[in-house]
Length: 191
Image 1 (cartoon, rainbow, N blue to C red):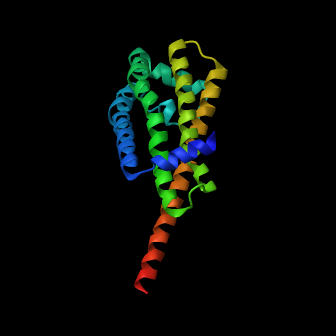
Image 2: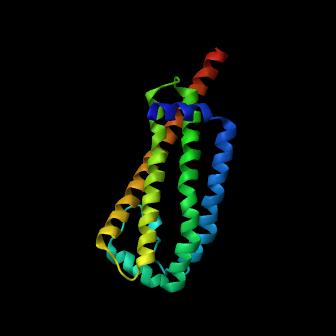
Image 3: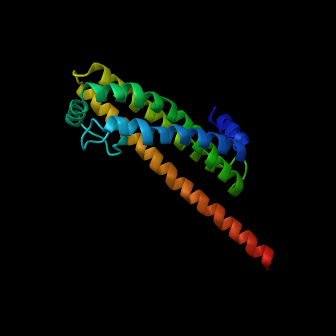
């Protein structure tokens, strides 16, 4: 199943597809960054939203954040921020899978094991959805808190961040390899 998925990704990793999916993802990302997250944060004081804590959090932090948000802030989090964050993980995964595959198509052979790295944004998106489901559960059941749900959701936040970080390291390395390949090609042509 995964080899077929990777073949499908390689096939659809065209410049036009990368551009369209990347732009869609960025529209949602910047809508969250510039509109919905600041709206929620106006109620949070100095606290960060759970989605923005790559090192995780504990149940005490969740309680403190939700108390600081108050009813209006929790409603904004649940009904303004979370709906966009239910769209973004898929757009992130698709756009960044295609971007990496587009670059890998230029630096490796078809069918290379390097294409397995395209699974990193899919993993990040998967854990983002799990994180979102935990946050939704905690917001809906507030003021009751489950230590297990808070801890599990925190683990999902950490895993999401870890896969994203690993992906961006791989992406940077792939861009570097592509640039080196182009530089070598130019040197050969000018010799």
